[in-house]
Image (cartoon, rainbow, N blue to C red; front, side):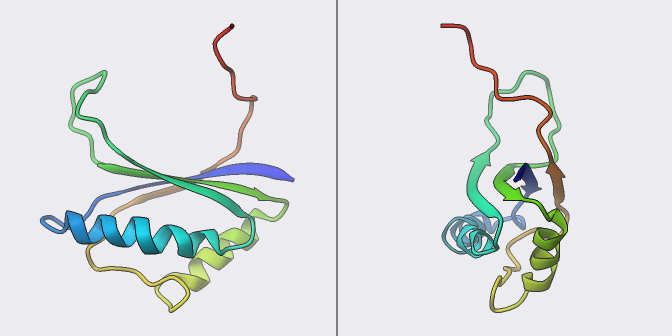
Length: 113
């Protein structure tokens, strides 16, 4: 099966960080993981220390691991379930977001031992 990474960058609505983070971590990740082919999920918060000066538009990143021979089926399920009882959304999530699938072109490299 082909592997993909679904990369999602988001922000909370101003002043609603707590509600956004609670929903994303404790509800949304589990809802997404119920979609066949999505095999893992992890969230990240942008570090205060960066290589370059900002501004940086996104404060949060979620990476979902996918394994499928039919990526369109995952996309279809995400669109079908989004905003329903199967994948409820919150109005604490800002409307603008970045959502994109990537496929690996190399194996993961590690430092030499």
